[in-house]
Length: 149
Image 1 (tube, one colour):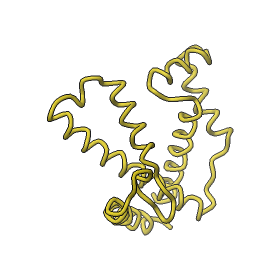
Image 2 (cartoon, rainbow, N blue to C red):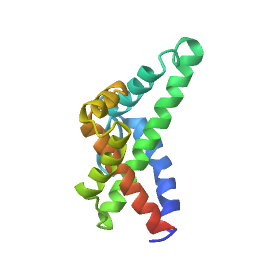
Image 3 (cartoon, rainbow, N blue to C red):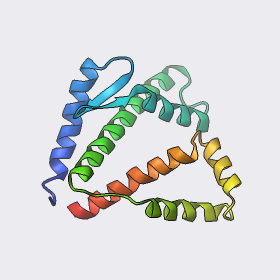
Image 4 (cartoon, rainbow, N blue to C red):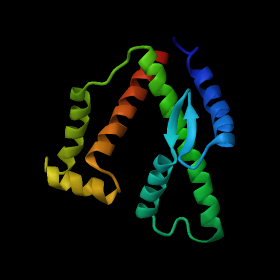
């Protein structure tokens, strides 16, 4: 399970990207081992970037940049799904306690104010549930890296 896992995941990511983009419909940006990655997930990430950096995607250069960002975001989502699936195969789990600990660390920045924390997430275009889902994916990735290396 060590480094043998890493290279096939990277190769599979790019192979899946090529094949799924060739045949994807309007609702699904890609499919990873039968699991759809909704186009809306890619759109949501672009919307967050646009909200944070209002002028980034203006003009011809901005259109090309957005296209590149979309590809990059989709690559990240595919990789995250592959890591998630591999973690499931290896019975690697994340507990609510682990996620809560990370959330509480971040809340300290806001003097443990739930309201300020939620407002900061809202400014980033994210809900608490979406943030918790990101933390879940991040912790899974960290655990997988620790197993590999």
